[in-house]
Length: 422
Image (cartoon, rainbow, N blue to C red; front, side, top):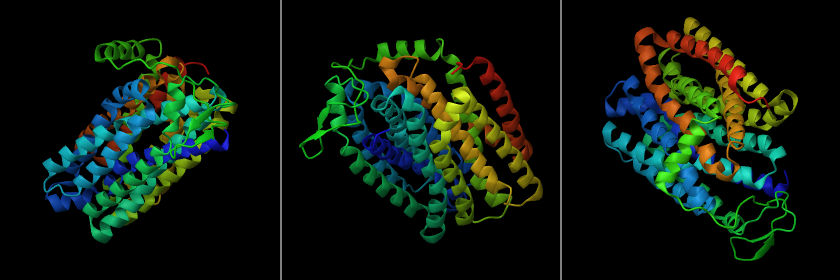
């Protein structure tokens, strides 16, 4: 990638970082929220589901709308909405009000990942796509891990309401950054097709003519308008067509990886006796592993192929569940630290690779294709939170980690058989 392309990826990654952080700082804060609102910590996990479910369900819609109206234009709207609604969460007086606020926040945040992935896929060459999407998602989900530490610290210091306000301010900063990329919509609308960026010019945020060397956008001169009936028909064709195995693996990835991660905060508090700050600091290793994994996924793909990247990620996830079993049995937080890192590494190798697979299903509608990956992953994460609560109620954390490990092994076997050979 050229420096200009890397700048775009990092800017978009920061927007994704804010959307991931906005949800996952809540995990180590759940005990504090539960205490303030006078509810059980297990009941408070509905807050995670309230965000993740619309976050997943609306991703393909936002991806398709971005294809139709301009991806950066849509990003400006939804990032602004994310910032405002996150601040409003701080004022929620009851669990019901907080759940409603989180649903609204999830609706605004829904398109950030899918639109970002589609936009990155259009500004880099196919050869660089695996690495670019890996870097994008590495930066994005670094926020998932780092926010756990920062959110836990803020919760212990000044309370969970202040944490929501802080992440709302980060959303405002992301909005300022994405506004500087408005020239990409101009290039896309003009039908720029030079993926290498040679000879392409655009208008920067200040209105001055600039060279867009290295930032060519693969697009079309006319965008198709968004029509709900056509969207549903096309989405069904993609979701249940030849690429359906990709979306099935995305769905199970959300259930397992995000479901497991969502319970780590309460596990570390209840079973290991850690405070919100201590649990958050431990969970930061998830984010650090995401950043590291995103930076090396392209090289793993070159050596082992894209299916090999997914296999390595699933293996890392199985190791994470085994370490969490050890942590549960011993009551020690020490095995949970490498478990958080293995979980982050596994997720960041699997999810972006599925995105890269999806872009080949229908290159003219990459926003919709990548949005359907988000639908599978994040709706799966919401379902995983609910199923995890049932598993804990029936057999405790030991049952949850064991079931997740077995499910990952089954997913790896299915993926090796049905995913494309690339």
